Image (cartoon, rainbow, N blue to C red; front, side, top):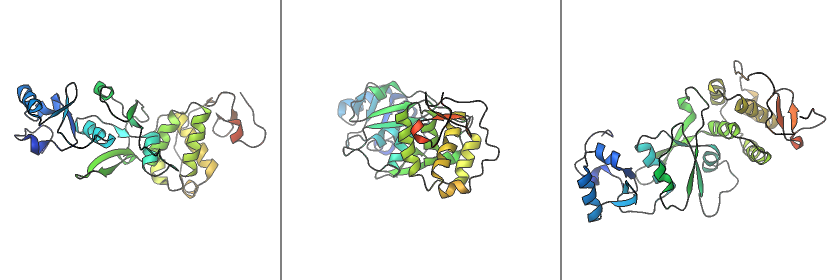
Length: 260
């Protein structure tokens, strides 16, 4: 059944845990009076103004992300969150996910800030590609219904973090992830680097690739990857890497370098 087909039964068209708004319900054939009746009768709970769910289990972040996807928002779990949740972190907070990084080119709905949840979402409005390669996104099943949640692949997630890298702390964090990135797929890395329009992210990706020299790096073909021209100051007061023309923290280089 497509999202625009009418549904006669709330029970059949709305899964337990899924959050929907009035527009979604209207598209399914549920009028405003009918929705109000469901709320009064307890068949629907009000999550926030204009936002509803069937009474059920405690809301998890996966419920919200899946619901956003079902409502037409093209978002994915990305950056650091994608790396941690796909096993590239040495640890996760004992209390579980507290902050989740969502990436997408469109603005997320304001109701995300109105829901009382034990976690929060960080929206990253980031454009790395004119057209993102389909292979950049993967899915993981969640829950009884095996809902498919969209995640950045580790290769994309690293590029996302590099595009937003601004401080020495950011540099240290990415460095730890690259140290664990021994399993990246060189074909996908090449595809992303060729399609990526962010010169800073590409130069940093290749710099970290050289730093750790994982097996995939030895077969990575960067022919045709455009790295722009001129110097890029990534870390203020850092050391200039002459190959990629970027500044990196002084404690990440050996020997004498030019600083600016």
